[in-house]
Image (tube, rainbow, N blue to C red; front, side, top):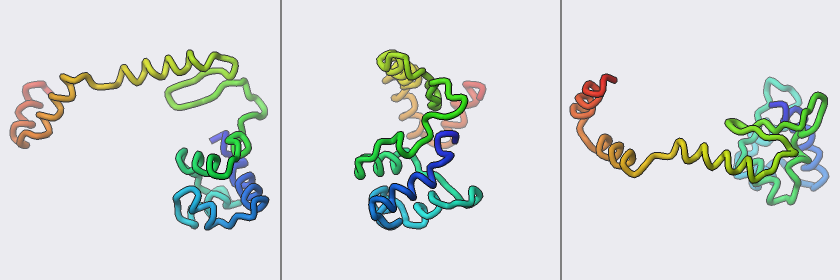
Length: 138
């Protein structure tokens, strides 16, 4: 959550500078007003954070650069972006990172045969599923 350490203050400053209410931000992000209030909470125990889609909705609809809301630089920042399952340096060619991401997606994507087997398995009776699992030793 390093990138969100000052998010609550930054969001409040932007909202107030743009003369937006918490309800306005909630409508922009497609959430309840209570969620926006918890995003801005000064007490870290009461604070929550937006999901990626709400964060991007806010940025796109208010024409706010994402880096204005997130702590992308700071002490000890080695230029490494930390994304779940994918890491690359700011200096790396983005095409390399996208190629790695595509390879990872292809690795976990089911083949047509696997999809058909799964479809048939789900359609069969519970008794047949149990038998199949026993045969497979699961």
